[in-house]
Length: 162
Ligand code: GDP
Ligand code: MG
Image (cartoon, rainbow, N blue to C red; front, side):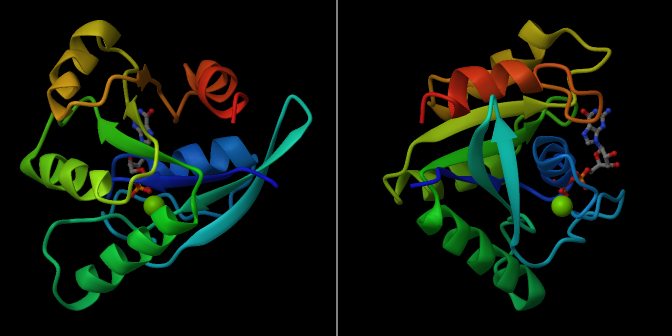
């Protein structure tokens, strides 16, 4: 079985940027406008020759009405399909109430959740990730998806062992 990895998190944390980097594609729309990817997007990644399926999601805003409700539903379906959830967080924004609610909701699926703290370029990575331990997940990787820093470590330490 090919491992399935779901990228989940608030809009604008960098899910599509990480998706593009892992799949080496430009398929996922990356934009400054939060919430642009409204559906699930599937991509193939190869890490040291091994295939993986990556699912990009539109993101969860916490406002479960209208189009946001649809996006949250897509994220839930992605989590149900996944062998591991990469829960993306924005190091620059810090921990938000939506992240805390999302953490609580993610636990109910019983899937392995790994925290990925993105946008650590130009800031102190250790200080940036310290906040996020409060979410109660022990495994955290700092990355800069836009630049690629930390992405190989994430792939080798977290994805390859699947
Ligand atoms: P998504 O909504 O979670 O899919 O987020 P996107 O991948 O569309 O990225 C949202 C914004 O964050 C875009 O303007 C990206 O260029 C920016 N971004 C993504 N990764 C990084 C990063 O590592 N560092 C910085 N500084 N910006 C990033
Ligand atoms: Mg996106």
